[in-house]
Length: 294
Length: 153
Ligand SMILES: Cc1cc2nc3c(=O)[nH]c(=O)nc-3n(C[C@H](O)[C@H](O)[C@H](O)COP(=O)(O)OP(=O)(O)OC[C@H]3O[C@@H](n4cnc5c(N)ncnc54)[C@H](O)[C@@H]3O)c2cc1C
Image (cartoon, rainbow over all chains, first blue to last red; front, top):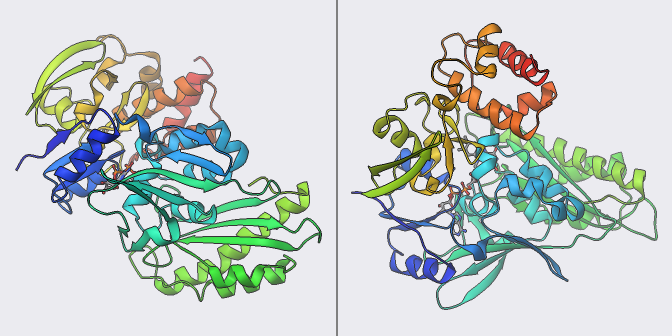
């Protein structure tokens, strides 16, 4: 059966199409994953709803509470965004590590998050930035914190009549340090583990952590926050010993699987190593500048 | 089926193709521009790399319908059809082509890079070609050809 292509003029039309084709329609963003899934007959939609023409899904807006990133921003656009580079450099830095130039040219932040492929680079960073998914269906909208949005292996909280419109992130405190480390055999591969940390130093106590957020990709069916480790880091002085202990603890919070790229045991071990390294890099950045420039 | 108005290598063409036809299929099967090669068809190998509005993309994961109103450039758009252009000539001189299957994609990725960054470092060249696999040359002659281009050779 031939697949139809629907090109809505605006968000209302896209949402109407989403409602009409709830059973067998899929939105297409960059197409970098979806068209591969179709080629491999993993999905066979009867209609594709093209999100490219939808203006409401574009742009990067700075608001008083945070930054609102339209779902159709490509990795290329994230990398080039002066606002993101200035305020949350860790996000464009992670976007730079997504796959290859051609995939970054078209693949979008919304598609990356909705596809929820284990080892994708943006979810751990967006988790560490306290990201929220802004979802719309024809009749109303809702916001879902990303840690509740990623529900399972290639699964999200997105309902079949919804469109992810934007990802909202908080302004990190001005003195925070953000680091993303990707461990992969070849840099274009999905991460074996991808570790994002945002460390907010305690302005009163040099070396101490006011808040640490740790996003982990590739080491469980879903990207997740290492919440117990984060709690343990609160108030601690971030030195090599603390970072090592945090790495060990984080490795007990994940639930990795084995695949041809890496065994579960190796992934767990790499969580230990890369959480420690990411924390030490953040600490180094804070020590150098008195702040981290997330 | 849909009627698509495309601009390929500067020429306006109208083709009939399924709604969700891939750019690679339209180029090869409808327009008989077989420079862009069919490889993995899953965006890994890059031998189908073409340029859309200057950007390097993998033709196997791009909807042709989306390219309407944009400028599509394939390897057939290099040189004038008789004479090779300077980058093609340097690929030849440096032995950047062995079996040749990756060549058209390499050239298109390299052109996108050089337009964005006319004086790339070796690392930037590698990053610019990170979507393109070559299984013959070991890449070095390809990088050399591109660096020679940027030196004005
Ligand atoms: C060879 C290859 C290597 C890759 N390597 C990496 C890597 O190293 N790191 C990495 O992070 N990613 C990697 N990816 C994935 C790449 O980043 C994808 O392009 C991206 O995850 C999907 O983005 P897209 O815009 O292309 O989405 P699409 O392919 O268009 O869509 C993906 C899915 O999300 C849904 N969707 C998209 N946007 C929305 C929306 N706004 N609302 C509702 N649903 C939506 C679609 O219906 C579809 O189910 C790789 C992909 C390939 C092909």
